[in-house]
Length: 445
Ligand SMILES: Nc1nc2c(ncn2[C@@H]2O[C@H](COP(=O)(O)OP(=O)(O)OP(=O)(O)O)[C@@H](O)[C@H]2O)c(=O)[nH]1
Ligand SMILES: [Mg+2]
Image 1 (cartoon, rainbow, N blue to C red):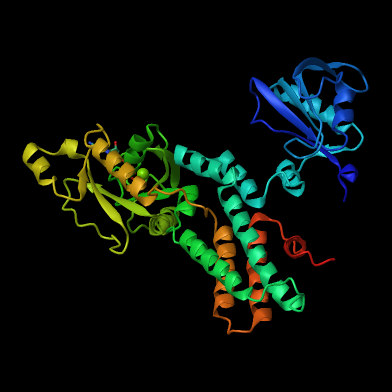
Image 2: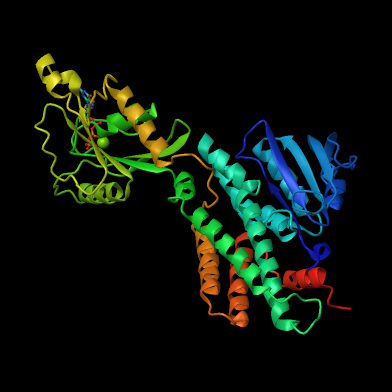
C-alpha cells in the first residue's frame, strides 16, 4: 500500500488525564487537512497558538499550541500534526471527536505510530524495541540500556555484521556464477571464510553476556516469605516506605501476593510480600500459601522472615534457593538475646522501629549491582535477539565446517546467516547481494 492510500491516524499520545497538557498526534496523508479543519495552519515546524473550532458548528473547542510537521522527516515518516491541548478529559474528548469526523481519519491502534515509523524505514526493529523499553524504563540502569538500544547499539552492530556477511557472500557467489569471467580473482573462498570466522567470533562473544540485558529489563525479583505473623508485610512496607500491605496482629493476614517496585541504586527490584506459610483449613488461606510458595520458588532471592525470639528452625526453607534469613522483631529482645542474633549471614532487624533495616537495604543494593553487574553495555536485551544471533552463529558454524569445494553449501549457509540478521533488524532483502556483486566486479559490461 502506498503512503497516500493509508488511513490517517490520531491518538492521545500523552498520559492519563486530567493533566496540565495533553498531546494529540495525527499522522498520515490527511494530517494537514485535519489540522486545517480545526484551525488555521501554522508555518511548518513552528509552534503556534491557535483557537481550535469544531469543523461543523464552529464552536470553540480549546486554545492550543499547534504544530504542522510535513513528512517525510517526521517521526513516522508521514505528514504529522500535533495539538497541545489543555489536559482535561472533556477537552480531549471534544477534540478527538472532532478529528474522528474529518474524512480519512480514524483512531490509531496500539503502537501504530511506531509501526509506521518502522514501515517507513525511520526505525529498525531493535530501535522499536528500544523505544518500547524506554517508555517502560523505571530505573536509571534500565533507561540507559533502553536508550542505547533505541540509538542503535544492537541494530548498528547487526547491520554491520550483515553488510560484512553480504560482502563475503558476494565473493562466493562471484566464484560460483562468474568464475569464467577474466576479472574475477581465483581465491575468493578463503577471504570469505575468514570474514565468516571473524563474524562468528564476534557474535559468540556477544552472546556470552550471562543474559544481563534481559535481566535488567525484567528486574530482580525478591520474595519475602516465612511463617505467619513474622512481620513480612511490615518489612515490605518499611522497604517500600509506604503502607503497601495490610499489617495486623492476626496470623494469616496476607493472602494475595503484594508487589512493589523499588529502585535500588538505579536497579529495578520487584519486592513480593506473600502469605505466611502454614497449614490451614481455610481454603482462601490455602490458596494464599500455594501462591506464596510458587512466587518464592520463581524469585531470584528469598528473604525468609522469622521472629528473632523463635528458635530459628524454619520449616519450609528451600535449600536450593538463594535465601537470606531476616530475624525480625529484635526490639522485643533483651540485650543478651540481641547479641545472639548477630550471627553471620542473617539480618537481625525490627520492621517496626526500622532498626537494622539499613544493612539489609545496602546488602540488597549490593546484590542487585552484582546481579546486573554493569561493565560493557550489552547488546542483547530480548530472547528474540538471542534467537536470531544464535541462528546466525549456527549457520556461520556450518559454513565454516563445510568441506572444501562446497561453494554452494557455504553460500546457502551464509545466506541463512544474513537472513537471520536481517530478521533481527526487520529488513530482509536479498537484492543487496546482487548490488554488491555488480558494484565490486563490474560484470554487466
Ligand atoms: N514488636 C514488633 N512487632 C512487629 C515487628 N514487625 C511486625 N510486628 C507486628 O507483628 C504483627 C504481624 O505483622 P505483619 O507484618 O502483618 O506480619 P506478616 O508476616 O505479614 O503476617 P501474615 O501476613 O499474617 O503472614 C503486627 O502486629 C505487626 O505490628 C517488629 O519488628 N517488632
Ligand atoms: Mg502479611
